[in-house]
Length: 166
Image (tube, rainbow, N blue to C red; front, side, top):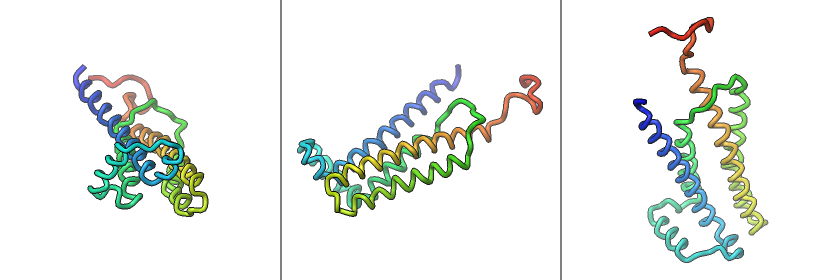
């Protein structure tokens, strides 16, 4: 089938982009919640050197830059989403869910900045960011499917009588 290799390659690129976004989040967690990882004994000198070299690029100057890059990579990975056509998709509910995911994803910095919890606050921060990512990915995937289905022409005619003739 012509073009099949292109869609497979696109799917692999988007999967790699999603994995890159998740990897950036893990590095962000390790950098921002370093005391949590050190108390658990999950600290490693190679990871410290790697993040030290990445910080020279300006990526970890602020906790927001790495988090923003991870967010952008995760949203890019949703561009080629295809799925089953569903009439049960409600765009208003998905937009509300997407906004809720954004609030949880970006608002989780409040938990980290409060400083009153220390280790449990860092664990709560990582949990909230994870929940925010999952809600964002789910809602953005469903919105992408809805938009694709809305603008894609139907293969049937107006009254669903027959396939198009060529």
